[in-house]
Image (cartoon, rainbow, N blue to C red; front, side):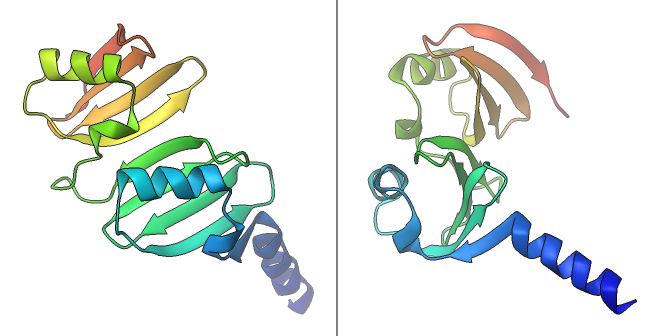
Length: 140
């Protein structure tokens, strides 16, 4: 039983490692400072399997950054929160504002050449970096 417990604990430690804000790549720190000014980083976890960094900030947003510091996903932990539109390309902002006026962005994720975006009105859209709608669906 002890061996199993030791194996499980070792596996958890190998999967992710608590680190400090200082270990984040400059690109990730700049992204947070520019788009979430004055916010405080609560936790940083480095994933050993190459998935990069998982970061939580005090205002209720979670991020996953690649090892280079480029963001992979941004999540608002409350539907009343909105991810700043400054986090995505202007072409995508224009499409969202035109197609879904007054909507809030609750989740964004990079997917190869496209971006998955979930809005507060439970609409999931996939956009190209140029703002073209690739796919959309209601996720109610």
